[in-house]
Length: 162
Image (cartoon, rainbow, N blue to C red; front, side, top):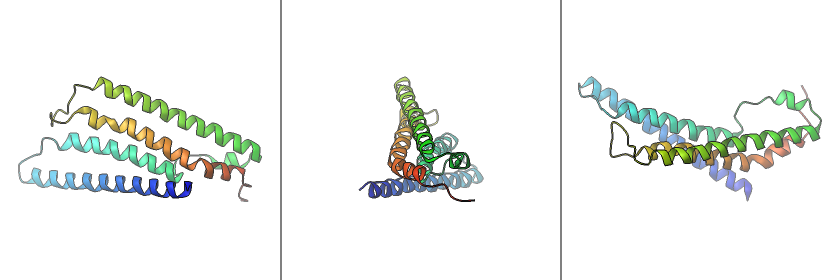
């Protein structure tokens, strides 16, 4: 059951990141075509910056789902199994706590931006664009929780021989 949830969650994140990257590429190409034609798109820069932030947050959640973030497994592998498990629990607790704090801060950012809009597209609320902070933090926590059994299994297993 948990494996299936992990699989579908990872596919969802892959799809979101893929769509965002394709959309960003299309917007950049469109902006270049318009600029070459002498008619610049006024909203291009702002939207491209926002999309890069979205790709960063959603991509970070995808990387977390795959266990692709920076770590020091060589140091952890030198520890006996009980210490490896404790280190994994402490590390995961710190990561999850950080992203819960980030989500809380993201919520407060949305409260502050209640009446703000984009500069180049005043009909778009800044809350929509900045919601990625809260959403990304939640997705990251979900990814970490879904990976926790694998992390603990790895920590309990004998370290690989060099």
